[in-house]
Image 1 (cartoon, rainbow, N blue to C red):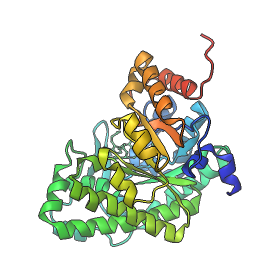
Image 2: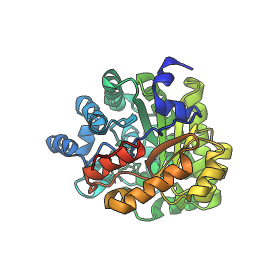
Image 3: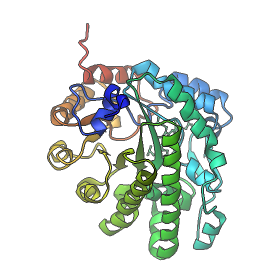
Image 4: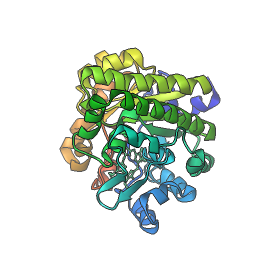
Length: 350
Ligand code: CP3
């Protein structure tokens, strides 16, 4: 065991150990619910400019660590920097979300580069090096990427959609072109993660936000296999690279996912039933999750009850406390403070 693992509780859990107090971080912990984020965001021309401003991105990465003392810092960036570095035009419209020049038919794939333009991503690696220098030794530093399927849903639709219909249809209508796009994204993601490790992250998470909409066969083809191939390529260059897989919405497919994908830990979304998580998933692999972001937004008894149920079910095994998806921008800071106290069992004076 390396000395850095000894000092970092979250890395110990990823290595399969149980921590008496589960390490805690939150997806989207750096974001609009934080006034200090909104202040820096207000100074930037646009969201992507912020992602590529290494000094500010490093500062934003550290903001939630300073405020809440979380056990992990997650790189401040976005999954859509990868399509951007593949030559697709990406922008973010205030209050609406991402816009890309949609890949409407197979011929449009020719507009993409065949490899990542690493020069475009250089500021991300610079951000990582800066955070590394300032990070407290007990805090685990997480990099990330979007999974190929989730990236493809945005690249094909050109924006977020409620049901990912354009990408699902594209995959049925043009299976060869779609497989090529996934191959390109597997390769780009693996290279991107390799560079993140070389720049200084301790572990990475693969976000497959839209995995849950796929039928079983397509889940195998567009979620399971691409994740497995990214891990193979990554570990060929970074042996033992620690990876958290987050196939959101996978439900009962999680078992098949774990059969084929050698992630160290699996992220559970808030719909996963806790007894199923404990007996069918955590018996096989450390787990991370799965508080409903809406319970955190609601606060009060609903929040306390949800936290306690999760701790009761999962804290006897290797476990990382997290949300089942990202913090919502409207979430009150006091609810996050309460969450931290309750998970860490800090006695309350009032
Ligand atoms: O978790 C963190 O704190 C690290 C940073 C991070 C962001 N996005 C910052 C962000 C991470 C890990 C992501 C991942 C991401 N981005 C995913 C996968 C996880 C998920 O949330 O489902 C996806 C699908 C995206 C794409 C994306 N980025 C969308 C659809 C949007 C618009 C919706 C929204 O929340 O605004 C974004 C914007 C975005 N990414 C913001 C932040 C802080 C808000 C932008 C702003 O400040 O204006």
